[in-house]
Image (cartoon, rainbow over all chains, first blue to last red; front, top):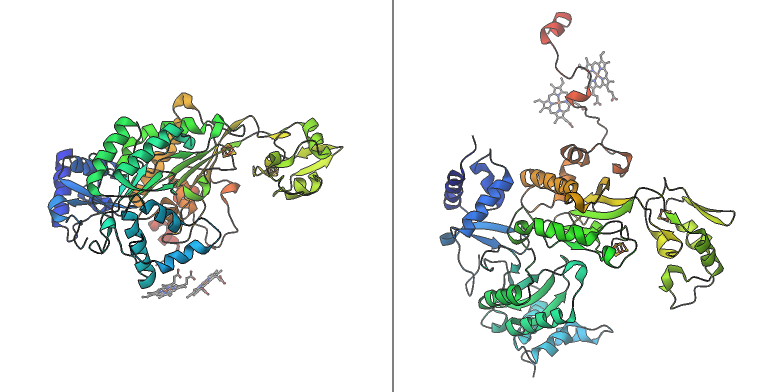
Length: 80
Length: 426
Ligand code: HEM
Ligand code: HEM
Ligand code: SF4
Ligand code: SF4
């Protein structure tokens, strides 16, 4: 049985919190629920950004996901 | 007055071509931050290392793309480029602009940015180079509310779809590239504005094999117009070309005297599949051998036209050299009808099948063409449920093994071990 949307959201947030790296690729979240299609996992991860719980970090050609409190704003700092 | 000494950059102005250094100096007269671009670049030339910091979390509310964060790692020394974000603005279909639209956009960019532009980037978008984080939202508001224009794709998003001028101006267009591009742009708004994949993804639409948007070289899915039937020949017009009454190539090479038009040398002998010949003063084509290269049609546009049974060829997997080398897209579907009546259903189904597979199998930062290369074309064709045809074969095989799957072998691979051991003791 695939996880419900809320369960999946919780699993994604937990993964983002516990992972050693602050930024994760979308593929890193696939394991949160192997029964959910990758494109649906992507939609849920993007919803978490919409809700303000995660942020995008983009190199310009690839986009990663991170929890707000785990990522520094690079302005005027050393960057990430 | 120059803010920084830039002898290395100044040298670039000495060549015969217009130089971006000259452009930057001119722009710096009204936008002083442009001096700091020059200063930082000069330093990079001296030290042979970049001083741009790559990437960031900047964006506009609700979008996860369209803004590419860039910062200087020497903000104290070059405050003008402390923030120097790039904005991607979606180009209009076929890149038709009104001068009003261009003026509005330039006014907006003078107001909120450095004034530096790139028309157009490799994605197709209009690239606006250099602004600060606090200008992003006001710029976005004015762009969307006052101009009705949108940002393009960046990051792991679908890139702004691009198309050739197609049937709006070009009689060679084998399908309505603008209709398809518009339909796909609307259908995939979410994929354009928010990350959707392991990496970037592009599709581009050309109306004929001249491929004016270079789809075959640059897009993950290249949709290129073609025809199934015969090249339409007007033999009377062929005679006019031979007599020298019509200029070849629509007069495109008239800047120099190339001598009398020679149909044997300039058309028949240059056909890559050698499927043309002259017979009794008439031009003949064996259309079954024609590879639709467009050469003969380009040379004699008043005599030859693409056929009337038209659609598109779909090629997959082009990319620029990032991990491996650059590669062209590979032919997957030789012919697909392009019909707005069913909202391009067949194309949509094809696109989404690729996405579902690549999302799952593709590695991080791997273009779909690299995934195809890694797993091999036979594996990809199987996923796409496409029957292999001779046109899929690029070269003689280099792999000596032939692998059969269970269902290809009569009786399959399952064996009754007990029965086998009865004949062959272990
Ligand atoms: C009726 C019995 C056998 C038949 C018909 C047979 C047939 C073959 C054939 C056609 C090849 C390929 C040769 C090539 O590609 O140049 C081969 C390779 C080989 N066979 Fe047999 N074979 C038999 C029994 C055996 C037995 C009993 C052994 C070992 C105890 C054996 C060991 C090998 C090995 C090691 C190779 C690989 C040689 C290489 O890769 O260069 N074969 N055999
Ligand atoms: C721990 C024991 C063994 C290991 C790790 C081993 C490993 C390998 C490897 C890596 C290959 C190359 C496969 C390829 O290139 O696709 C190979 C080929 C081969 N091995 Fe072994 N092997 C072992 C034991 C044996 C034994 C006991 C036999 C025969 C009695 C044997 C017979 C062969 C043969 C005939 C080939 C050639 C197959 C071909 O040419 O396609 N191997 N082995
Ligand atoms: S790709 Fe073909 S149809 Fe499109 S503009 Fe170029 S020549 Fe015309
Ligand atoms: S389109 Fe190209 S391949 Fe076809 S007949 Fe003309 S020159 Fe030959």
